[in-house]
Length: 340
Image 1 (spheres, rainbow, N blue to C red):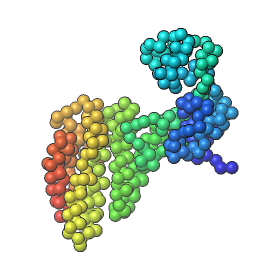
Image 2: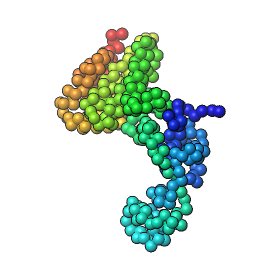
Image 3: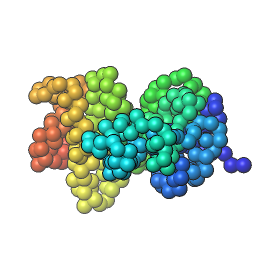
Image 4: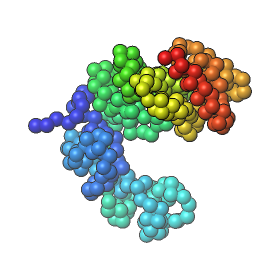
């Protein structure tokens, strides 16, 4: 018999089953068409069969007529309300409240569909596995980009279910960062995958900390270091490696120098993230330069740009002075390759 992916928890549920349990109340008991992401992302090959299995194991039950109301459209709710001589005026939530006050028998005569409902056992099971909801929620970042996912967290969580799941996720981000660092340190000519992953881990850790809302100082520090490492390690190191490798091709070398700016420019999503962090820090003007410089100093990375030059570049990018930031990047890249 093939087992589901991952490791089961104390009650024997695998990550895929926990995902389906968390989503169960969204589906009618007669539902046969499920979103493809359940299969592609969580490897749930047969959602309906899994729901029925969760029902047999008493993690979910069939809800009553009132449990279905929130799933109806406003027009449908108004039709039900009119049939019961209830006012059809008001917002959806107000009509649902009025219908919920009707007896189950009267409501059930009109509402034939039923949805799944969590039992106490099911509720407790989800409480015991909070990391599942984390991966179902939307975030301003995506930890799966560096290999941290529901399966890797599941493996650690089942070993220590009392350990805060966010500590596990942060620890795995830190581990991914260290592994990427060792990869490009061992062989800088491997390509940009390791340097990109290394820098991205700093960005993700910064946004992860920001999401907790406990320390915007620490969150911004990690994000600022990400920007500096992206300038000097990801783009900078690759420029130097490629420039050296193509010593016989002047045209290619010039292309690499010009491309340096394209690798370090701030894209709209990065500007949005950076401006949000600066707003949360409640700083502006010269304080922005000071904060950037302090984090860049802590990064302890040397490369194409110095601390001051990198701060100048970021501020030019934020200000929309693209011609000046591009010129600065080109000048410093040209200066750096002359040392090779």
